[in-house]
Image 1 (cartoon, rainbow, N blue to C red):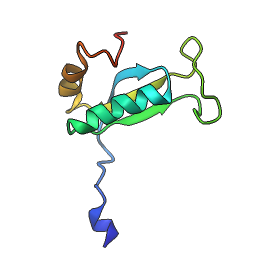
Image 2: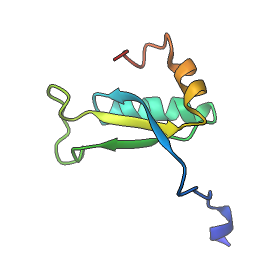
Image 3: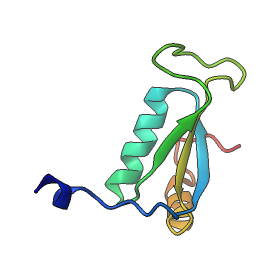
Length: 87
């Protein structure tokens, strides 16, 4: 019964990097903002934030990834938004 409630994930969906956050708090704020607008996102990075919760010169950056189909809308939503710094 619970399997029916789970969202199906397309294993062949292509993800595109939307932006980068300088920590888990910023990444979760952006992720929540996107979700409130109906856009699913995935967080990725090279460091485990719970062990090394810091960011020095991009070392602890967290990438926010969205599907290629959602990318144009997500980018538009984040334009002129103080949550995200332009790269």
